[in-house]
Length: 253
Ligand code: NAD
Image 1 (cartoon, rainbow, N blue to C red):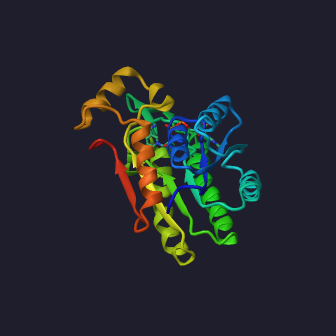
Image 2: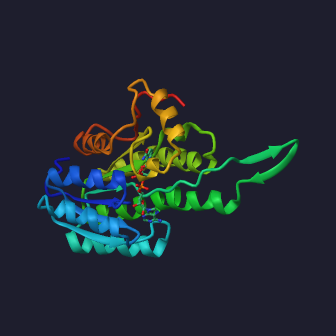
Image 3: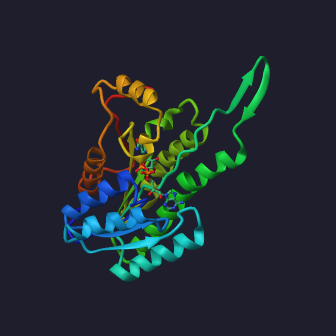
């Protein structure tokens, strides 16, 4: 896909990776529909891409709400006369152990609400946005591209039952959609970043971050720009579909 003049939707566009991907695509001449939960950060992303002369608009939507996602994607398609690309990027963390026991007694457990809230955004949100983007691509006869954000945690990670399950599910949907949507000329790929410096990782305890840096052969966390570069590659490479790119500095969990 030649990114120039293509209409690309980015969810979670106010966040660290969402903003970096918006800036990268703006530089390639994409038209951008920036989706987030109506926060100031979304406006900052808009201001930065407009400064690069991008044609862009913001949309406030909760990706886990079906009605909100359906109306947002049909509005975007109407505003831009179709949709060519989606980066399914909105995501949250609510880490905790499955169970904690002391002296043989279970003292705490991950609540269903803690599990479900992450599944709602990271898995159901990706499902709803992917479905509505594909619907609009078919309706407007576009050979589109969908990119789903997974994580290295998809392999399973301490304290991340909810997050790991959601990110593994995202890769399974990527392969399924690539097979189902290939007949309409739609490609689907996933990116599984290792730990990248954003607000999400800045909130970590410093000793935890240092430990992660030491676990990577490259000796540092990734940058949002390195993930944006990966998204650009998936959009541009027409032979890429149904696969996940692990971009993690060689991290082994
Ligand atoms: P971030 O917290 O900086 O940004 C996430 C954005 O998603 C925020 O702007 C937030 O408002 C938005 N969001 C949350 N819930 C939403 C909802 N229900 N509807 C709409 N928007 C919602 O996070 P980030 O680091 O930029 O991560 C982006 C994606 O990359 C996430 O899916 C994350 O799981 C994944 N990821 C990040 C890292 C990392 O190291 N930063 C590593 C692996 C995967």
